[in-house]
Structures are given as C-alpha cells and as structure tokens.
Length: 126
Image (cartoon, rainbow, N blue to C red; front, side, top):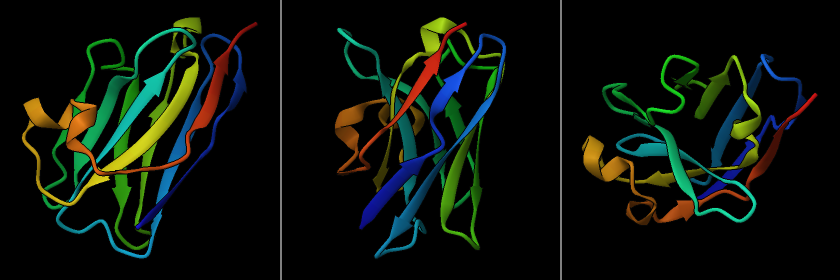
C-alpha cells in the first residue's frame, strides 16, 4: 500500500487546514489510520486516529476539540480538519495505516503502524 498525504501549507494562527491521506494499492477496510506530527527538534507525536470499520476516533489532548478526523469510504481517504490552529501545531504531519482494528492505547503509538506516508508540512505563523 502507498499513502499520499496532502493539504499542508502556511496558515495564520486561528486559521484552518484540511489534511488528506489517500491510499493506493489496498483499501483501508479493516484498518486503523493514524496521523502523527513531528516538529523540528522534537519527537514524533500522535495527533489522531480512526478505526475504519466502526468509525471510532481518537485524539491527542492537545488537539481535541480543534481537529476532526473522518473517512470517505468511496474515496478511500482519511481527512483531518484542523481548526483554530496555533503556532505550536507547526510540524510535518504524517499519516500511517495498520491493517488491524487497534484499541485506543495502541492506536496512539507510532510503533503500531507498519505503513507510512511521506508527510506534509503545516506552518502556523503570522
């Protein structure tokens, strides 16, 4: 499977962006799709995840209430709508997929995912 992450860019604080993660070569069925981010000089951290089969969603505390993850079955794509963006949201955002239905405690860990996209840069700055 190949993952294509897109939608990053430069946005002012308080603005919005929508990231997309599209899969080719395999559908997302029976999978968990996660988003992680890595800021300069920092470790990769969990942002959000969605369990494809039942639509269960998980969020990091730092983005809960501002970010919304969703899936489009027809397009085999996962989205993250990011609102009220802050400078501390600046990072390269990566999508990843694991072809299992992960429980929340596992879905938040990068090591649980076998397949990763190339990353898309989000810069929040005035």
